Image (cartoon, rainbow, N blue to C red; front, top):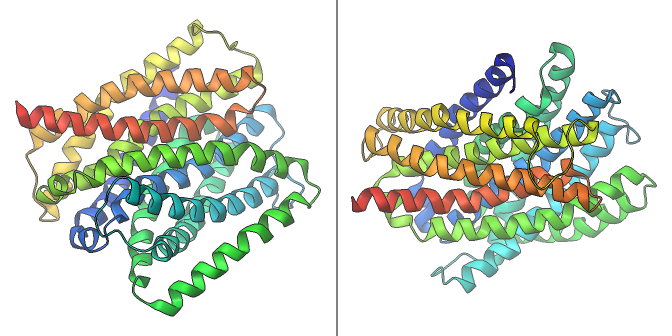
Amino acid sequence: MPSLGDLGERLAALLMLVVVALLAGLTLGHNTDRLQELPGLLLMVPAAIALRGNIFGALGSRLGTAIHAGTFRLSMRSSSVVGENVLASLVLTLATSVALAVLAKGAAVVFGVAGSIALANFIVISVVGGLLASVAVLVTALGLTSGSVRFGWDPDNVTAPLVTAVGDVATVPALVLASALVGKQWPVLAVTAIAVAAIPVAVFAVLHAGRPGLKTILRESMPVLMIGILLDLVAGVTVERQLDSFTLFPALLVMLPAFLAVAGALGGTLSSRLASQLHLGTISPNRVPEARARADILASVGLAFPVFATCGLLTHAFARASDLQSPGVGWLVAAALLAGIVATFMASAVAYYSTIASVRIGLDPDTYGIPLVTSTMDLLGAFTLILAIELLAFT
């Protein structure tokens, strides 16, 4: 079983995630008019948030493994572990932001989002918002990694939840800020043209840089990130279709990023810990979890109770302090706990089996684990939260 100090690190990081993600939720709660003015924008929010966590959470997980293995050195040279990861993450940010915009427009058309904004507007919001948020998340990921070395933190415990937290709080305001460009023809056309033209140049430069680490990260990351985008867009469609309920009680919009972030962070932290243990050979990729893996899974479930209860309590407090309509503190706590516990069991299963599957087929679990877990949990978390809302409303 993880030590009390280990559990304390994880609990503290998760509670910080709740507070920071609720701040991002306040941005959504106070921009319901903007969401209604730009049909399709809410559809893209879960995927845009998840991309920051998927790209930079995986970066943090890879660097965490380097710390455990004793190969970490804080250097920004392109030949170093840190330098390779930073370059790859920036290229992935640009490429996936454009891909997200194209797929979001396609999802809006396929799923019948009436009057959705134009493709160029999706691209501008996704690219500008994504790049603005990525700067903050990158600095945080590198700072947490350095802090883990200096202060003896376990990077597997703190990186996933806190990178997710900063991704939440930075991405939502960045998307809202970028949406101000919608309707300005020349800026929209210029950003779209530059972004689309820059992708092949950046990818070509990286692939011909002669750095095998860069090529490996890009080759392994792109497929899983694209799968993640598709999963998150389905989650976004689910939320977009409930826009009327969310605008009736804006407190639900306040809770949404925090709920999804906690579900993803619980699974992401578990995935990161399992990946490190697999790399170090302290557990084996068996179909049935070993005792050490089972202890980590049970710890995640145990942490879910106080964290999701706190999420519901603070959602009500933040909403009332911001003069946003809330369905009530008891209702919010019940919804967060009911949906959260179900989501945590799902996250644990996805985290374990996606991580061992990566190892069995010869892929890096640090690269595949967190993106698969967080994106899957965005989808499953959105479903469980909406089902809990409907069930409690019915009863």
